[in-house]
Image (cartoon, rainbow, N blue to C red; front, top):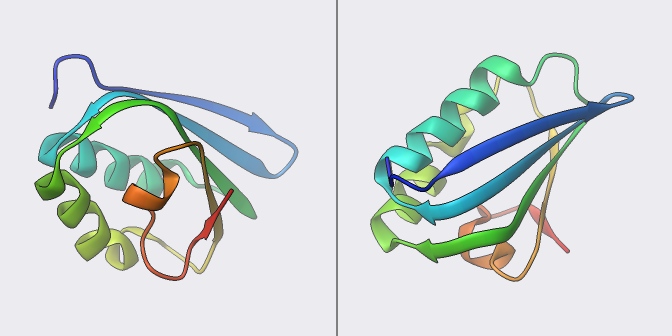
Length: 96
């Protein structure tokens, strides 16, 4: 994992907010996939906040996007926010 990558989580109501910070590489992608697989719980919406991402490694983006569907337990509405949201969001996700 990029030494400066972090995921901060916050829940409100039935929404889960994930704030990504630092550089996003292949290992960071797997960390995010594991959080999505294990920590979604009963969230009806997941907000992935990307405004604190510095660099997005193309390999990390590809790892995340190619493995995204297998990480989810059930169909969940995901919204990616921030300047770099469109760079990381898998196809079919919403970006703000």
